[in-house]
Amino acid sequence: VSARRADYARHASLPGGMRVYLRPVRDEDLAHAGEYFAGLSPESRYMRFMCSTPELTPQTLELLKHQLHEGSAAVIAALVNHSGGDEIVGGVRIVPGTKPHHCEFALTVVDRWQGRGVGRVLLTEGIRAARELGYRRIEGVVLAANAKMLGLAQHLRMHVERASPGVMHVYRDLVPLRGRRAQALP
Ligand SMILES: CC(C)(COP(=O)(O)OP(=O)(O)OC[C@H]1O[C@@H](n2cnc3c(N)ncnc32)[C@H](O)[C@@H]1OP(=O)(O)O)[C@@H](O)C(=O)NCCC(=O)NCCS
Image (cartoon, rainbow, N blue to C red; front, side):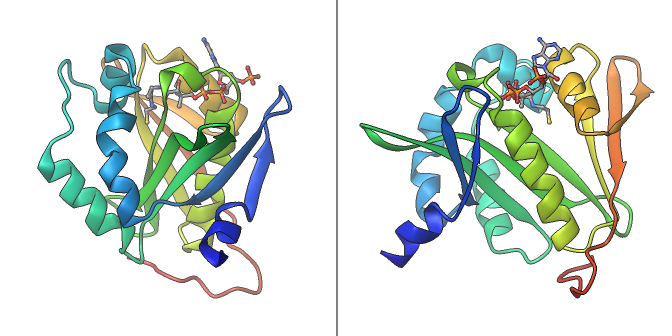
């Protein structure tokens, strides 16, 4: 019951009025990683993984599993509740960046749920989690062709700069949380 309650503790309303719930990804969710991945079109996979034939490999799953328990990372799922039960429709991952106090985000929403505001809710949550972890900058690498992600980043006050041909760097500096000690600073 308490896990169930925790599932519904954080939520946000989508523009259409539907409610989306946010919670950390758990080990048992990884059993459904294949289903989640199947919900991403080849285009979405390309946008996210930046290669033409990305697959969900055991190595990727192992890394993800490790990150679920890593104090300097946050892996958050967005769920919707409907007659068939809870469905994970998107996720955001915050991991340490290459520079001290910087973190990187990765974001996906399954195709049939894209364009309904889930990405915005998730990235907002990612920014909140990054601040809570004590990071001072959140950044990401986005293909220049990824208009949706660049539009979303700009809506959430991220700077967008060209990193290399066809690749953009997006980032936002984070104001530390007052009155709370940073939990993890790699
Ligand atoms: C990028 C992605 C996460 C966005 O999620 P989403 O749920 O579709 O986005 P939202 O519905 O929350 O849209 C948020 C904002 O994105 C922007 N946006 C959406 N569609 C857009 C489009 N076709 N062109 C430009 N901007 C667009 C808008 O700013 C929109 O704000 P609005 O509510 O004012 O329209 C999702 O499309 C996805 O998973 N893509 C594949 C993986 C990927 O590209 N990940 C990013 C790399 S880290």
